[in-house]
View 1 (cartoon, rainbow, N blue to C red):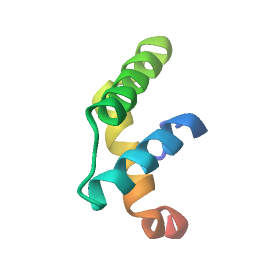
View 2 (view 1 turned 90 degrees about the vertical axis):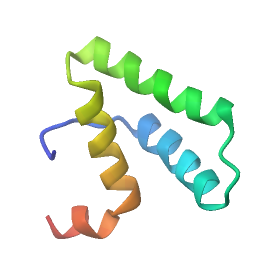
View 3 (view 1 turned 180 degrees about the vertical axis):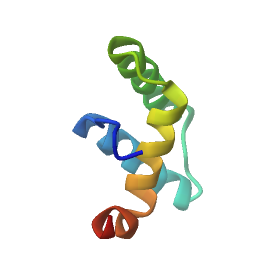
View 4 (view 1 turned 90 degrees about the horizontal axis):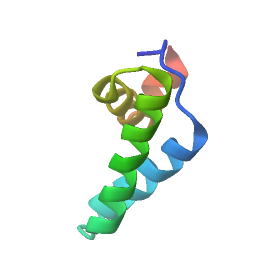
Length: 69
């Protein structure tokens, strides 16, 4: 997963969505914004949208794994 270049705006969007989800307050607007950003970045770079999403979620949800890698 380290081979995928994750732009900062995706990490920010996913972080916001994760915070909302943890608080039990994830909105459709936030979820839609994150998914739209994944689709747009994947389409413009040719990377798999699923791999991009998985890599971004790993960075946001498990930063300790990335720091130790």
